[in-house]
Image 1 (cartoon, rainbow, N blue to C red):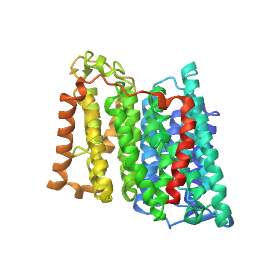
Image 2: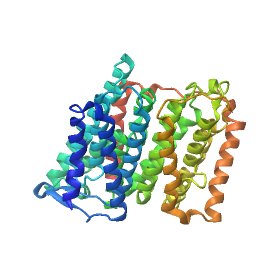
Image 3: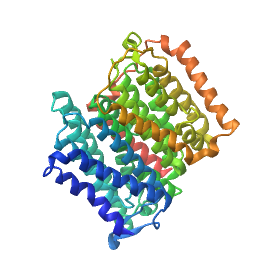
Length: 476
């Protein structure tokens, strides 16, 4: 089993550093790695490997590559491929492609981890590669945003590491399964690290500034795949341990409502998309059984939306109403907005139907409100003016968008049973109500939510409050 997986994991790191020796082949080598991940992900979807296999048996260091891993790896492959296409004709250097591929490989490593110590190593490599990509433009703003991300991430991972040590102390193993027998403080510390890393609930309020102020292709990678490195272990633990499942579901509902609550009133396109990343991660956590499929559809649509938003005439919605978008780009924007809103014929529809069917009764009202808020938010894009006058996009833009939107149409085959009359009517009614609420109420409002909770000095303080909440939930 490991004869294929270990070389596949090592390949991005080997090729990433080899790019420095062959800088003229940087794009082609990066694309080769991503294509390898694409093939591996499809193989895992159709031919899952055995439940798990040990690397260091006495420490519980194990790997697990099943269909859940396959969905997340496929998301990583398609989003990274789209970013490579988008940057193909740009002036990005070999350093950029090196970090992008190292980031791609370390995110893949997370998706096959089944123990807390190898997960810790992979998450730390992700932090370093992400920081270097965020700071790539070398402007004062990009360096500050990168350092802010790195500090928050490393502080969270310090808590996580203490929790991982406590799991080992209780079980003589770092395996995920040991979380069920670990002390309450271990669960609280590990969850705090993963919630922060994944941009979940109030622990994730670092995310809007980081994702909105990064370069367009980096924003696409951050929202499309990087935050899922914190979400995946939570989904895996919820599926393995019954006592963890309710905690994950609670944070799923809370995150979905928090993110969409901010997004509805946001006036900046990239910040609105960033808050919706927070909200959509809640949908992944709310129904762990189908979290892999929802993660795939969200990764594709959010990467597409960030790439499109980076090519709009302005980031301000008010200004966009006076600067019509080129019609083909508007069609791409509307298609992606339809998918995330749950419109039929796109995979977002099947993902939302499947998620709603796997909710527990107490989750239904909250998640339906989050779905309504999603429709309201993306009505902002759908009702923007457009015109036929040609406004050429950046080279590589359309190849990336066609790949991502094509994936949204193709992924429909995963859950074609969703296309029943009852399943189709409900999301259409939700979307119609969302559009009506936007046109009648939200469009006229000038209300703006305060950003005080996003300030750097409050982000670490929130971790302390979250740790107290998690400890209480663990005891309960």
